[in-house]
Amino acid sequence: MKNQKLIIISGSPCVGKTTVAEELFESLNNSAHFDEGIWNIHNPPFPDDDPRRLRGGDKNISFVLANYLNHNFEYVIFSSVVATYESIREPILKDIAAFATKNYNTIGFTLICSEETLTERYNKRGDDWGLSFHWLHLDPYPNDYVINTDGKTVEQIAHEIKTIIDTEPKTLETERLIIKKVCSSTNRDDWEIAEKDTGNLAGKIAFFDIDKKLRSCTIGYHTEENHRNKGYMTEAVACVLQFMILEAGFNRISGGHQADNLASGRVMAKAGMKCEGTLRQDFMNEDGTIVDSILYSIIRQDLE
Image 1: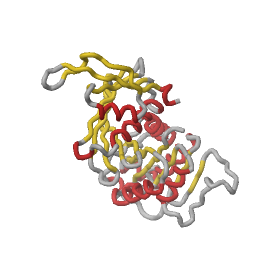
Image 2: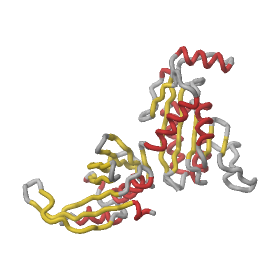
Image 3: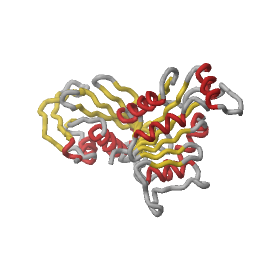
Image 4: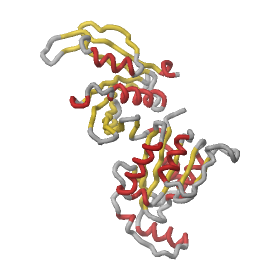
């Protein structure tokens, strides 16, 4: 199955998190939704003895969401006010990573609106706890997609979120690494690799010479000196190649290295790329000397 997606929807009370999350949930097959005490599953129904028919009870948020991921729901949706706070969301995400046994992408959304819109929604809902603009004026969680909900229907907001989660995940995860897209343009995508435990930068990956008609591109990468010989780059390249081909829709990705840089060749080979041969006198060193390079590639057929 495709890499799973943990979708976090946060924002002020009355901004529409739950309603939007429920609409999104209904539009996605093989999905699960948790909203501060409400557990839903989609595509079921399951029999009573199926382990995916989970109950909330006293299970904490992290454990429930990790269980949904572990039981192969492709989309796991979490909508909550508390996810607005970095001090709360960070421990939740850390615990999910500890419980989860599969790779998944985490994609966050912060819903916003004007004070006038929030007041209208509060009055329509009929709550009696008192309207507050406190959460509305908090800074969005770092790297969240921020969606202004003013003048939009629930269906439009859910569609906007669905378009993003199906086409542009911002991070990929492996057992030891977080791989984050930091820049995207017409002909280039740049990713940074960080250690999960420390958050320290371990390296970078770039995809360039993007040809949308041929659905092809070229990969290049660099490992920070103090993170070499740990297998990080092989782990990261394998993960990103899977995403670029199986989810982003590329058919061919190629890469090369100087003929005497055997370590770079081992990274590509271990990540699933195949050696195509030697390109003679194809690469110029910084000192101006021209040397041979070795070409590798991977195509969609290699992963099917």
